[in-house]
Length: 367
Length: 233
Image (cartoon, rainbow over all chains, first blue to last red; front, side, top):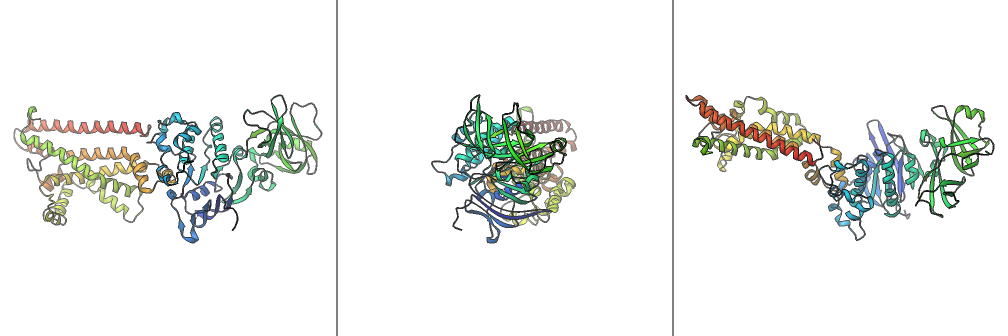
């Protein structure tokens, strides 16, 4: 009460067979990622917001507008919720052209049109699908379908955009094609987005807030870099894709096509990505654990650019027998994956000072 | 057609057959779609019973179906009597032939439409719903267009069945030349009279030609619809 209205306010319970979803989420504006293993209830939550599933009890409100409230006997059917749902399989209507698909929801949104509302032309232009308008979905590639599905949802003028693993079915090139549009939406459209994924790269690049789902429950909710540094969440954030997410500020160009980024762990040099790095802007780095080497003394004569000193604060054994070492680098966490042999040669124990050598940095433009 | 050497009764039989088959098909379509929807999507008590009743004409001897129609819709029938006081008469009328043909073709039509409804991806209807379309609108703009190939197939099957219907028709409305005598009835009459072979053969040729045309037309339509759906058969 008295606080700013949350973009998404959800407190629901639903039992499906033996699977129980019980979640409470209050998320601000921007892009909220539902993250967790398959079967953790992510898609169920999105379906509940869309009205494709009915909760046993609870309530959901978007921007203060209640969509369902079992205590008050309120349940809006999907077509009256104004949610833009981008499905993993796009679900374009096969008998309509791309233009007809894009405009399908327009008639029902006509009362909400304002002079600032996106038009078919502006959305097609933004998503780069103008040349496809007269085609039918069967003639589109996967990436094109995903963009049309996104455009169709936007043109229905939703209160919230729901995206259920919209990139999961696409290859890397197609993903790279769509991610910039999602960033633009997050930063400029003022539209709250609920986004399901289990890809860390998408979290790093897109998430404003992360909701960590596990077995139908919310394990944690917060900023990506915070959640990815918590040891108690390693079972979810770890695995083959384990790594650290670091918030960074672009500092300056340091010659040789390199840029210096200031992170809580120290200064990190990354290759310049045209158009992405502007001094003074914030970004987010993902440093995969498998790309970090450890040394028990300051390394000399290495080709690697980034060497960060730190103190071991956690070592755990992974399922495959390798060790994931967590270093505290000036308050920021860094993860390194080493073999069991290396771990015993270095005699890694908590409290020990080590140097992390970062082989590769994935630069993800965050918020 | 008269130039081809058809007698007036033969022309009347051909025209009546076409009229009966077209009306039977058109009149059966709305209830056919409704029943197919109920069977494919409905969750209600008595669904299996409805399914059984719809399929009865397919398994009963046509004579039994025709006799049932006579009891139900005849001039003294349970439904026929009140209807005839309203001026709607089926008995010994071409409308009765259309009714008999429609009833006989109904299970074939429902089966084809039901299969096409079951092939419509409910996820597409969900997607249309999230875009703001109310259920009836979703049905008209998503479900119906996507089940169109099945509706066409069902209509052609029912038309072909109606064109050739004999047993139920002759039982219900008899075989009155110029009035209720369809192609099949006329062929039957020829085969029962000495020297009727030539006439029977003429009408058999017409019958084969009409059926073949209906089949080719439906194939062409199905191909066109299939192309529009982008290769979805």
